[in-house]
Length: 248
Image 1 (cartoon, helix red, strand yellow):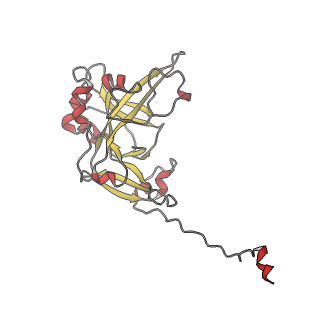
Image 2: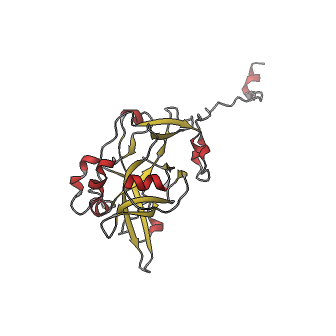
Image 3: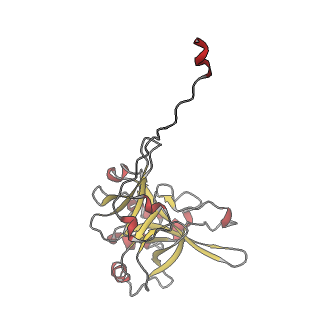
């Protein structure tokens, strides 16, 4: 599962990573949430790498009304090639989604206690690329919505202590293979849909500021622990049972 992520790298850093000339100007984003625009890197009409902003929350092309369709922000990599919502995009529209970390929430065994948020970033504090899929939904009136989702896989042992799913990471050496939808069919990129090894990420406990979409500054990544729930004790005197006076 990946419900929030960050992208703090500069356009220059990303141009170097993706071997592109330019990406335009954009600010650091600390708390990217579903339905917001996300940066994706794919192969454009001229067979060169192309940057595109899409809405986070994939809408399959066959959906009649997006307002009646459940938001899909993640897709299980194990079944993406067979599910109707993803198989066309998996064959024709694979992309990279750059990030400098993602957020995950751990739920304690005691359900009364609050969930603890973690900022999970690369141990080298660099940029990672999630495996992504994009679709273009077209309405009868000619309107279009470009949307996308992140592929997830079983977590490694380290991240599994927080959550059982994590994003699929595509390494720079595998960018070309993943993005090549002309010669590389889904079965040809299946080997890339694996979890990274323990130690690739580091997890930092952060406060619940990240829970609110309105919080978009660096404060969401400041270390902090959730406040434990303390059972309230009543200061009122207990009510007497009416039957207590029966003895007298």
